[in-house]
Length: 242
Length: 242
DNA sequence: CAGTGGTCTAGACCACGGG
DNA sequence: CCGTGGTCTAGACCACTGG
Image (cartoon, rainbow over all chains, first blue to last red; front, top):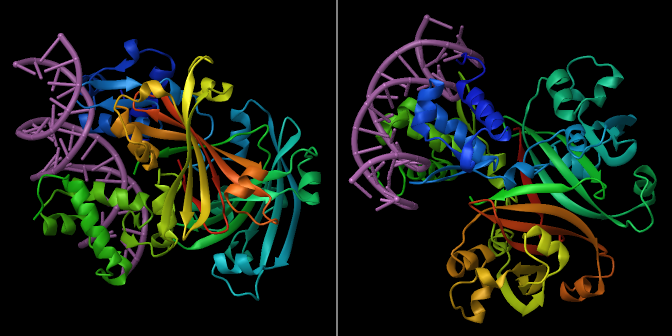
């Protein structure tokens, strides 16, 4: 029934998720774990790992002694900032057609907060990449990414900078992000922001993200600032009990 | 070595975490999983579950074929908004002494966005609870919580509303939160906010959270609005790859 | 190549829910 | 009481890292 790659757990998870989205289970209820295991020809542990992932995504919930149930409300959440999402995907989720515009690329002396966050000396320079994300041709997200040039080990074409930053890093820097540490910062709208994001005059406050990308070893690699128009997009986050 | 309750995984996790924080492992490296299993007298699966939790918290990272290593940087993160945190704890994490002030409690006609979010008719009323959280006596968080009174099944003293909302709900409403759906919204500072949070005149933008609390079955239970001063607290979030 | 973490299995027993 | 999900075990094999 299932192959060895990708992992059985992932295949079972995708299979169950599709079944749920297609409403192929009655009573908002999934069969018992033992039955699923027998039907799909995998062990109960594999089923349980897949169910645990679906529960984390909010698609199902389990009650000891009662069963596994579908959470219809949880299926509706569009964006989950607690995961790293591509801004293009985020825009698409809200029904718009996404485009990316590379505004500016320049090598700049490092600013002191960036130097501190990336554990670099104040003498170095960083590659500053400014991008604009548009939803149906309306600008919605403006990002400034600071990349230490010494991390870039492969030659690249300028348009490669249009890639999501973590793909660019993986492809040209022999680095891989493990997580972002994101700080949520309110900002007053400046003239630059108003022009770049084409804001109307009654939009005077924005949410911005100040993000540091860390690699697997826990070392900071890049810093990014993002500015969001929240009239077309929502910044949503699912928070769980520890 | 370990008892049956709480779960072995939790005990192993706490034990390893303490060992890590006490710097009792050399070379930023943990022993192999098989060795840990033998030493602690549990199965390798139990060890692995505990390690997976520590990895999610950013305390360690694992490299297939190489080993399990300590992430010194991950230990420093103070707040993790992707988890539900008590505002008192958050204030304490930043080294301040927290207090809660109950500003106002009143039964109000429901506003239409709240009615929609909680799936209630527009004819009903809600209990509106306004609280102020102070750090060393400086106001830093202002919250407005909307609780449908029909959920409150137990009699309570007014001061019980000082409890964190999810504790109040668990204790007096026979409900239990499974997760919050949080939307991050920028706000311009109003006179009310400026007075309540004692903001200076150069603070004109704030971050606010519009949160809906869901129970295990995925039904919305309460709505809360929170307003943060971000000069004393940071709103930090760890974002991971899906 | 040896040693590590990653995946999966089969089976046992426990704890809770509902009839 | 039975059936459910929750926890734990022992063991197998795979995939990757590094000397």
